[in-house]
Length: 395
Image (cartoon, rainbow, N blue to C red; front, side, top):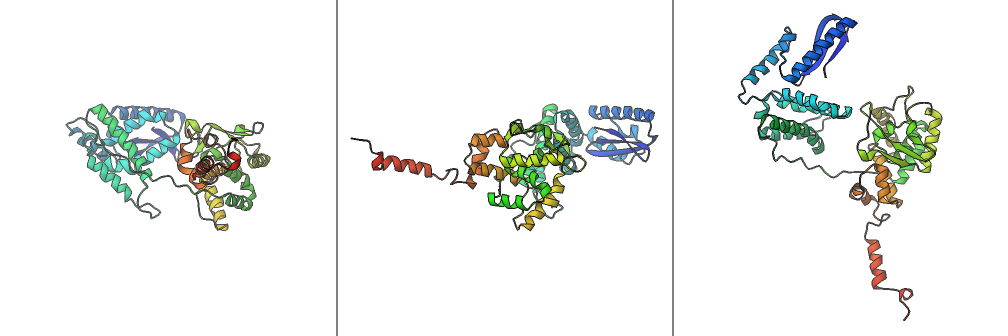
């Protein structure tokens, strides 16, 4: 969505056109009358962009973008199929669908479009994009050199980037009656989820050595299986000490409170004794705030800040292999399984819709304690086929 912003006391227009972020400065002083006038112009620009009738030079004749977009327009007029450029249709598609997207998803999608997709396909006529060009684009992502020096994006990340490209092409093909070039392109195979949970001894070691002001935070992380956004966005109104439950109703993602990840993520987590004690202690510190774990001004803890300043330095101090904080969630699952809790109960605590994830990912870490090694069946056969004297019925 376009906006009217101010800088140095003057108003300027900030909007997207054909995949390009445009900022056009004016000589209008920031006051109520000028703001109202500028917003009316911005609304008109947005409407014309949506309808495909916007001409950049009509509004900003001296802009550096005039010639660039004029070339786009001439190219579009030359297309006999009558279909728009990929960039133009993408903005229409985005504006039509963003009302149903979460803030975090819009940010992720906008990043994929602006950073990867539009630079490659933006100036192409959408009906003339070829399958070979899509496959070449996907291959280029696998060879991309990231700022960290690592070569290639992961298959999962590539699939996420490619997904909106597939959706945009499918919608355009339906509207302009051409066959989508994405036909028969399958997603890349994503390796099985790798989890590296902590042992109970490691958990105790961490809790014994972590900064005292963060001990309740990590106690809750390790013994509830909460997702990162769930614990950072946990509010006191969702902590029920009478029923010993933590109610998962919201999540803090990309600096914004939002709905939970999935419908099954809405759940009630039972508080074990260490969790109950940790939260009672935390209440003495932040009980007057909205959020359970917050900074000095009452805002949720910054995820990256806590990870870099507390988590990784602690692991290095304890000489433990570096692992992401999310492994605390995996740790809770394996500890519950090891203790013999019912898989259905564990799935509910984790926010899974079924027990499939438990048996697929976690149970291999505790084969003996969860009796997933065949020993129970072997014992049954032994008892049935080779009965002891005490098992033999009276004759």
